[in-house]
Image (cartoon, rainbow, N blue to C red; front, side, top):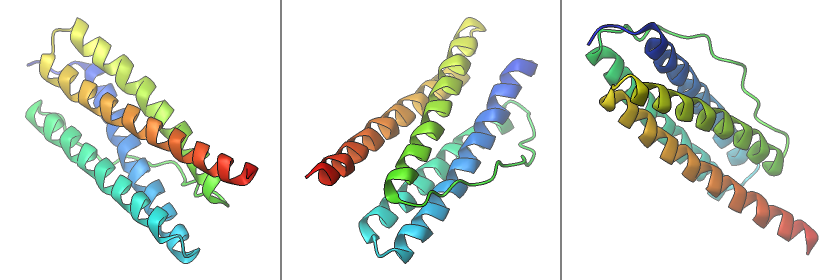
Length: 147
């Protein structure tokens, strides 16, 4: 399949996003561990591992397409000063991913690149699941604060 610069751009942006998410979640896992919030630390570590898996999927697809998965410049992490702030920051991160993957999947479908479209669609579903999970945790925190 010929190299499509727009598809390449989506793949590179997605890889940058996933690597930034790994960095973000690992920092949050470390902070929550320091705060003695072991359950949340474990969840952030698990999220980092899932995002790392997403990065691996993207790299594998890029290699199959003959696209070098060059290193990217990652944005600075925003760990947050409280658990609620962390979850709100992560929610923004997931919404960015959802928008990117919706747009990328739609473009790849229009270009009849079913394999890349399926990759983005799968990533989209994972990120939608993350968003639902974050919304549940935020609701629990807010409900606990209101009690």
